[in-house]
Image 1 (tube, rainbow, N blue to C red):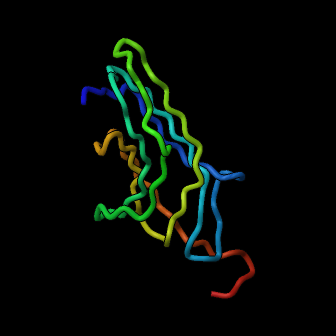
Image 2: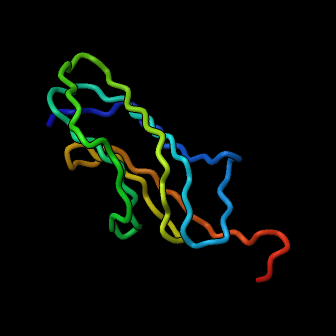
Length: 119
């Protein structure tokens, strides 16, 4: 597979710029951008959430492979997904294409105590 990644930006944001929850499981809206070049063929794209040990705890992606058949063209991939963190901790968000890692970004999910609640 000949595929080069030119630019990747993985950004997490919620409606108010942060995620506050009183439960261990939480979700956050994540925007992902990747610019691909030298593509030629069918590509299966997947976003994975992995523990720091590499265990995949969540995955999402289009059901069908994408036909990126012009190696001289740059393809912009844009995703807005609702990412689910199963528990507080450190994770890595991984962009996979045809089973190969193209980009990786670390995220931390924290459990916040709401003001006025008991410890």
